[in-house]
Image (cartoon, rainbow, N blue to C red):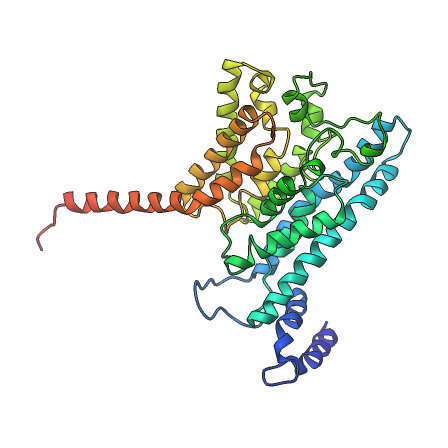
Length: 385
């Protein structure tokens, strides 16, 4: 490794201060710190004594995403061949899914990181590491057959408008990945909804109908999947969101490493279960009558709660605020599903809505604590010496 370190140091000389390519130093440093821990410390803002830097934190989140990604690749092929009624093997399904999904991941990273590098060079700061996660999240929340150019445009919108316009990583008020999906949904609705977009090549074959479970319920049709199939993920849906089983494994990685907030996850489960149970008592339509525990297994509920609601930048920061934030996401997700039949999946809008209100939640939590302490102070008796 010392040989590699020495080689990088030699290559870095033209990028040093005062040298010919000084302006492009952020781009070179991005590759350097990807391989090695940065040799500098924080100059302003919060100072944390820790051996883990932001890149390593982001890589841990990427590792937590991999189980859901690998299953999503397999499930894309599984849904394709199952709908056709053809015999296939595990590797047939995985190969078909990889052929469809890996180009989406590549486009997401190329476009997103390209924009990040340009802004880093223009502003003269280091490349932000947050896109390591965002670049993988965006294709995982898209339909399998969305055109690559739409992925590229959605990524560009998310990075430019949802992130860089606010100052880059750590400054955005909305989750960038959900910003990309929201843009794609409203800009290209025919490619983001319906009963054909969730199964590979379904638009070219009349016999294929790949409605999601929530879409089936919204249309007043009977759901034919059992709870285990919903939990394991062998159902149509966005690439990374179908298998709650593998998402839970990713959640365990985030919680055990201290990166993801278990309070937000637990709060979302409580809020979603509570609202689903209330609607079960009413049961005015199929979405209301859908068992509350199955509401937590389908759609993007689990994926959004684990990987996007817990985004440390756009989520609530206080301990009590995280509970409130998570509970409200769960409540609003189920409410949007039930009351908006044109858009039966509510987790995206619920998280984006709470992203906006997260600072307000933290403000009132802090003010409540301040008032409580002032009240204790005013009633406290001072002991004489």
